[in-house]
Amino acid sequence: MAAAEGGEEAIVTEGEAVVYEEELLQNPYSLKLWLRYLQVTGSGKKGKSEVSFSQRKLIFERALKALPGSYKLWNMYLKERRDRIKTKCINDPAYEALNNTYERALVFMHKMPRIWLEYCKFLRIQRLVNRTRRTFDRALRSLPITQHDKIWKEYTKFAKEAQVPEMACRVFRRYLKLEPDSVEEYIDFLKKHGMWNESAVLLAQALNRDTFTSKSGKSKHQLWLELCDVCTKHAPDITGLKVEPIVRGALKRFTDDVGKLWTSLADYYIRLGHFEKARDIFEEGISTVVTVRDFSMVFDAYAQFEETMISAKMEEDGEGGGGGRRAGGGRPP
Image (cartoon, rainbow, N blue to C red; front, side):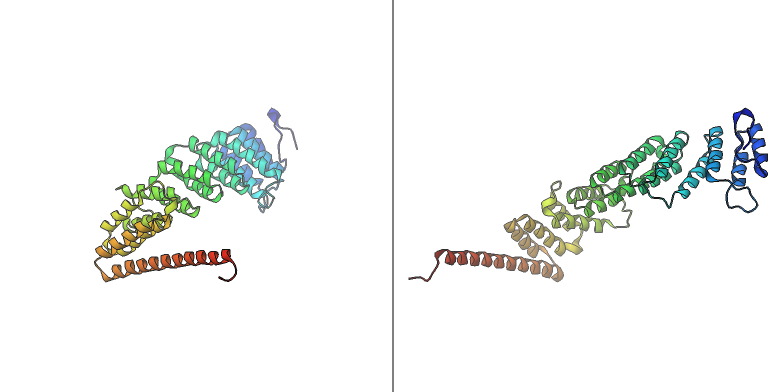
């Protein structure tokens, strides 16, 4: 190690590195020169000078002190630091040290979405949920809206993987203000977590928009049937929609599925415990369908419903009679 002019210490004092040290004293703001110097001091390159990582780290720090706005230098430095700690436990202090380096980089690189995304990915590896969420929010505040789509793609992915449904819902609601046509992704998430009411309301709102196009390639017909299916199979959970008008609207639109829709509407009232209303729906369906297939579907469902009701009534009467005999005790006189 030899002292250089201006108080800086030369890192490597032999071979090609000495030449670069002398050139950097004369031109410390040359990016090309710093990059060539880092290449020369890179370990494992045949015919090149090899230095320890601590010395190479110091070269990076000197370069970034001279050129703090260089994306290429920051990217190289962060990548090399990440590669060196891949095999370490996430509790190792080296992870927090690299977190701090990312924060330093973002002072100058806050308009670079790639740095934000790599930092968020690195935080996700460490399972730092709140810190990751706040970092995604900072990225959205720092970047222009034209680059938000890159952040939101990873943000929603993180929200789904974090196993915190309340946080994920808030993230998706914000995202849908920017990309309302991505509602199906949120609806699938809601279904997975049993949030049937919000999923049905969002699907109904999407169907009411003439400009809505399914990103998953589903037709309006499929989406309508999906909405009816959610509403009727999870009747007690649906509080934000009037289900019967929705199903009747589908009956008018899709004549090929009237049998299925009539049975679904009756099933909705059965799940709510409104058995008389369910009978009225079955009777109305039987009297209005026009094909044998639809008639058979509605009639079979109606017969099964009545058979279930009769069985339940018989079991109830049997239990009542059995209880009376047990209460009296003994033989009659």
